Image (cartoon, rainbow, N blue to C red; front, side, top):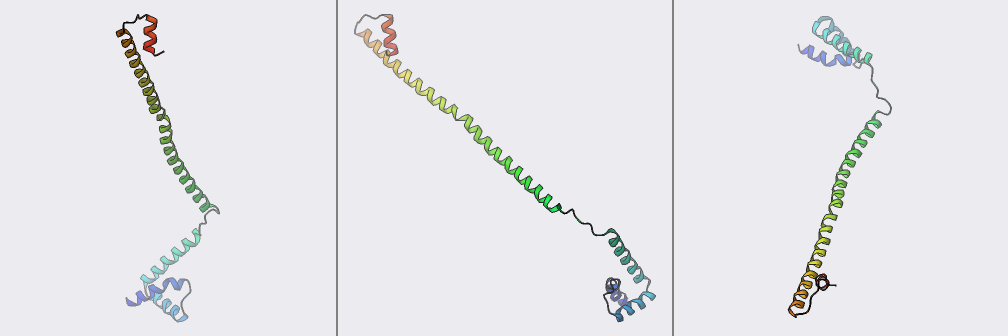
Length: 146
């Protein structure tokens, strides 16, 4: 049994003819006597033959370049999606900026009109209290502040 362990460790090198002449004679003598080791050698030989028949498959010349280009394109698309999302936020803010600006402008106009109308109202009231004659045209001019 210990002899089988020793021989099995040399079988692959035996097939490759990478062992000394003395070891080769020892392996051959053991193989004549041991069915288990002969089957192991036959299995190794079948594996070697299958590998040789299959051959080494080679990749197309630009295979790695194509994979890298694909990954770079994927990264670029991801970057573009991120930028579009950020641009969408910017676009949203550009759309929303006129709303507060319009509110501010309308508020200023409303304040101006309401303050001028209160001045006109006061002027109209003052005019009426002074006992002056008031016509519709004069009342309108006093109310509009003209």
